[in-house]
Image (cartoon, rainbow over all chains, first blue to last red; front, side, top):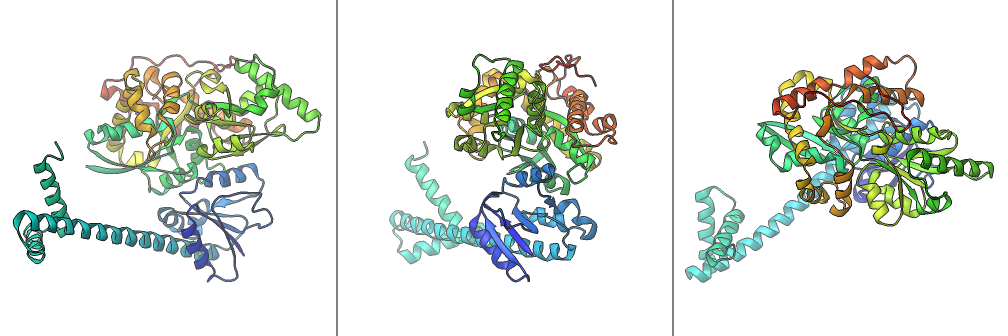
Length: 192
Length: 352
């Protein structure tokens, strides 16, 4: 069976393609865009495409033109596999079947794709959180510096004061530090 | 507050959604709206179908095709509001323009000039010209086919019609992969400002105040949430009236120009708003049955639907002018009577 993965996000496409290698027997090809000429000769049985790819509309038109006949999974999957198409769309994955493929095989492929899509989202989320943490550490350091200068505290004392403020207000220390810096800016006339 | 997610495609006629959000018109109706920019019409349709979107900016014929289940998954959809009329056009590449006789201006003249050239190429055994549209079920597809056919071109035999996503059309015209594009605003203006071609047909000349996009919802949503739907429509008709006001042109163009909205230059967006698109005036927001009937005739003409489809019944089930009129009346933006329907450029009159 041949699977074509179309995804403008190359990292995610690689992750999906890698996951599909486990589904046997399979030949997987990935592309950023659907280019009929570049893909001539591959003749996929199923096309897995990211919902954020604009090329979905090209696949719809091939069906309309009757050149090949890629039918979207949403058209029939729910009769044999209730909820599958909806789950996939919500996960950001669409699929097209080129000709008769057993519904069970569609499910196994779509499930791999959905899992990999959410894995990618989680990885990106973790990365964003790590960046935000780093950012918050910088803000805390600046707030400490401000307290050391304005209140004559040492570094440890400044940190303890920030931590107390955070605990009193029930807010993250980074948020309290950011407020402190913003207020200091206003008092100095930055925001006027 | 009721939470709703609305989808849109980066095109100028998504303006009512963007404006209603930006100016707090949804919030004023007690709606907590999230706008979701989508990359394809197919994804818009699927997400509305499965409820991942509550409503969306939609090509008017898509709602009809989805309900009929032709070439599309069947799901009963409604068009309770037209988002805009006019706005699309055909741009031909410079190479093609230079090959055509000069002086053609009206739709009849430009179609005849193009038809002559196409016949000449065909006689010389040259490959057919390639034209790009945005989706198989779209005003663009039907306007292009009708206009070509009016001069004797068989769109299925004499030209090659391909689907290209709107933002990529300009690139393809530049690269010479297509000879002409039929697309909505702002892409014709972007192409002509970029020196890539010339606009030879505007849908406002093809069919003055002709249909293009609607708000699409599932019939199920309209049945379950009639009050939310009316609140949504009231916010949108207020936004449409704001979009039409000439004094808002600059602000509207700048708002749409943002990368998270249309993502094109404000100067390329403004012309279609001031000269072509109508969002509210003269009943533009009413999804008129004449429009639905014409789309279904075109779908039949080009074999997208069979003779068995009850066109009148389908038009009346999907197109719901009553829902738009209710919102217009509630906001005080309604008019006593809708203007008479304009005929097409060839004089073909449209009746409901």
